Image (tube, rainbow, N blue to C red; front, top):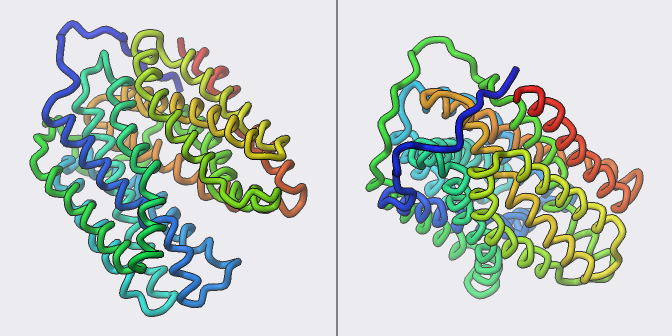
Length: 388
């Protein structure tokens, strides 16, 4: 199925940095700050509740499964029922579940809370991405989505350190209370956003998945399959090599993301997706090959730089490509399909690449992850070029 092409020019000089665009970027940053603050502490909290180390991954897995499952349904609902109410409901739900973590007395209740949080996270993220796609002018869509993503990147850079510091100084309750408070602040900002009015999709039976965005979704899946290796196993790999603190890798990664996102967005708008996606996917492959061969912190820092280039370029480009491939009243379904593939890649990557570690070690795992990213690039060129 060919992707529908849009021109990269717009005859109307609509501004990007409107009041509402600033508000949704701030709300997104606060939401992600609350999430990133709590995320690294949950494995510690689970261990405190008596979860065996080998089962701690369930805390992440349940969340991811819930988000993947709900996104297609959310996408269809956004197109049929509108964006604002679902976005606000998702933020409220995220705040409530984040606050409730501290009161989970047993493991099964924590898993239920993670399930509920994952459902609301899938709702909120899909709604926010769709609202932004409606809001930014078409000729600056790549740039606008890039700036929007920077708010989440900033949160990723500072949130985990704040959360872990709070656990040490004030305990888990302080972390989850602050996480909920930040999400409620995001809700207050979101309440004042004037959501663009888009003609709604007719009620009734409509597909859960948006077929027109299959290519960005498949490329995103193979890309984030490799990310599962980084986010899950890099600390363990570094520990095996005698590196006690791999934190600088994530710092380099986050800083590079911040720099690359707006640049890649501008290039997407001016030159189209081929240059940006190709450069980004190649950078991810290079980063994984470096991780496979390095034995020290220097190599990991270089890998973090290339990984930041890759994800900073590819993620916003795939999102912009997806939403420009469908009419406005199908953007919710497009985002639901794309984000679902993104989450599925991370979740399956963490599980499948873990099996590779047992068979071929960390070097073999990163080589397989590099092959996954390379396959995504091959598919992109094979099918995107055929649609031109």
